[in-house]
Length: 253
Image 1 (cartoon, rainbow, N blue to C red):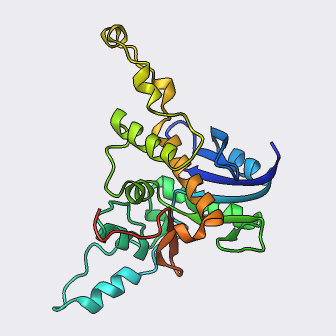
Image 2: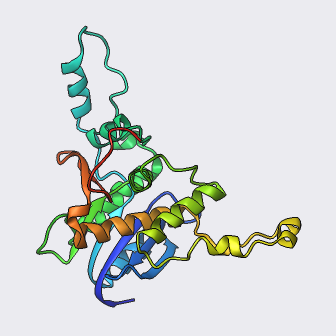
Image 3: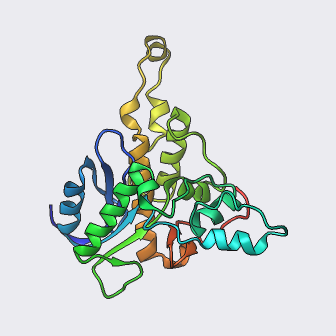
């Protein structure tokens, strides 16, 4: 499918049903795609856009030992450095109370979803995608993190992602940010005493957790291009920066 305007795509590689879940927004934050697919499907969708910025919910590369070196310099007594198997971006998020998976120094030791992410980055770079920010390129990619995105947008650690309340919370955050997504408050209007007794819940009004993650990434991509002053980054360019949809980050979440 070819769109004439710029598309802002969020890609989540942690879906259990297929390899990826992806969401695409137009310049007005309208939802133009929300789907699952294999890597070839995602690449084909991106290639069909006239201009696209894609935010990926996965590390762009392995850790380069920056955190380990930092810890060694700050140690008062020489002993084995522990808890250093993560990138600087992940270290900085954890310091703020945002729990994220660490990335090993060896790709083979990383979880499968991270390895799939590495492969996606490689294939997109081979296809001509440039690392954000590259203003002269119509095809850009950046790294983000869905849990961190919701933490900074909510100003606190959100409720558990798989839970009903966690999904409602995330969807409401996106809706309040101006995305043309389903209004989660409609969920409550559909609930009646009879439906509760029968166990009938209007779940079709809510997005799945992986869809909400992809939507958060797509929104981050949109901000990175259209409202650059409203984003921030953590990490080191040597290992990869994580882009977040909030200008000022709190010390603790």
